[in-house]
Image 1 (cartoon, rainbow, N blue to C red):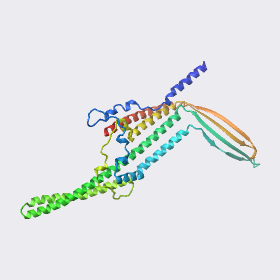
Image 2: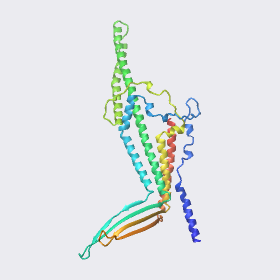
Image 3: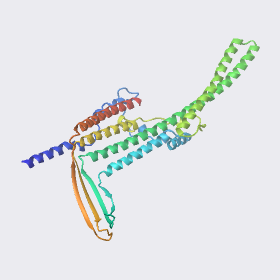
Image 4: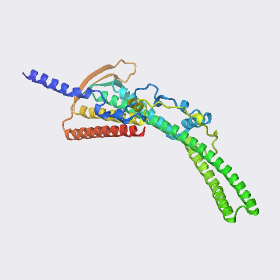
Length: 379
């Protein structure tokens, strides 16, 4: 009867622990109604059809075809400190994942020892010991597995942050480059207009001498000329400020930026937006938000695993020589040990930690949903 009750207890523990081995699946409620965020601008209430060539899949070099702009973008990607920091974060996450994977394997240690002892200053006795220790946690009720899964999610999260930084840099450089082109065009037009107004003032002065106009009209023309001339230094200052901001992204000292004149032919004739989930899948902020959900999901599983025991087996094999002679075979010792660790008096802390993990998971779900809605409204 006792054996039967023990078997039932073990089965109950195993069944209750099965939840720790569940995999993350995206809740349907997170993406509910996403299609309604994207509508054809020419046909109200009709969702855009599927398109495998949507704009999100277009490489940036095909979008920005200006050769000098491409050079600036590539320089920013090579030199930008934020992107370098994001790359280091990715490498840290890769190392953390490697650590999590190695938790499946046993640990080995070698601890050689030697002692010399003497009693009443008599003949010294030498003892040598060369033990090799091994330890392996063979059962953790999903804690090791979920830790690895969480590390994988964190790696994807760091990659998404890096992609977000990369996207921001590309967009920032392109935006400043086109701003400079617009300012150049505005400055050129303003200078041409100044020359036109100068000629207009000279013409009106000649007309006044001929009695064809008056001083009031000439004064108004001169005022317009002065206003235009005053806008030239302001435009030149705006150009320098944008160039300095662009140099900061490029991680170089402030200097003039080489650029071509504005040409509308440098832009693609049309863009294919695509469908909701296709377009959202290419946004690093959306992917990062979901990876936060995944990481929090497995963190809940880790918290649940803490309620269950962990089984560890360990062993030691050693050669020892207490005769004082290294060539003496001495003795070979071997030990084996299996330990089962079950938390007993930490249930309050474990329950609190599980509650915290669940609340964090719920919070990431809300943030993910909000990110999707915000991303949909931006397109």
